[in-house]
Image (cartoon, helix red, strand yellow):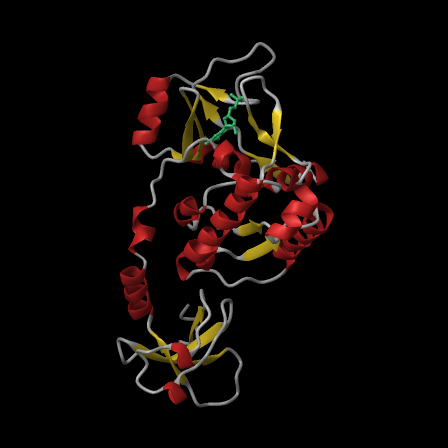
Length: 295
Ligand code: 5GP
């Protein structure tokens, strides 16, 4: 961000150690930093290596860091799979990393329903007798759903038993219009589309604990959001635990730079407290945000 005095600051989205960078012309001249650090850019004269120092560092000597362009290019070369993430996701029931996430979201919501809100999803399945349109779901036709998908009206959608389910951008807007904080549970590839001036999201990654802790603490827990044909909840299996750990690792390595905070969901009460404290602090503390959010 170029401030009034013409100074420019950036917030680091990754850890950097010049000693491990094969490309840097001189390791001793490099500046190491950690994800979240605020750096002041002293020179951008070189397209590949910028000069920077840590915010508020009185030492006038700047160090070399990779330029944004250079870092993005070498990341793109190393990890092309980021670019081919499909937007369409299968129904959320197949996303076991969300385990505990629903519970955390629910607890936060009921802790202050004046302050927090959740979106009403769209579905193409018929309304059940006890349901009302606009409460559990917004019920629409398959044709309209498909048109809305074409017109990018959904943040995410999935198919389950021959019906579509999805979260529309407008449903997020209607929560915000009530002056509420919108709690959203999304696949990480959607975060990129939500990181805009309009939504200014704060992204929290709810991470599973170690596999040993999962076995110890979740052995008798059930996958509540995934129902078999009789509607009964199934207990977790060893495969579910391994899948949770594996997908959490993939999410972290591919999307870690988009997470503002990571909370390990080992003990639910502890994780909930951390979540609540994070949200409370968010409303009082100053935050560094992308320059494009300031206009
Ligand atoms: P039901 O028809 O029993 O209300 O829900 C069936 C499935 O649809 C559930 O497993 C639920 O998780 C999934 N579902 C509900 N809302 C959404 C949504 O907004 N997006 C996606 N992808 N799946 C959803």
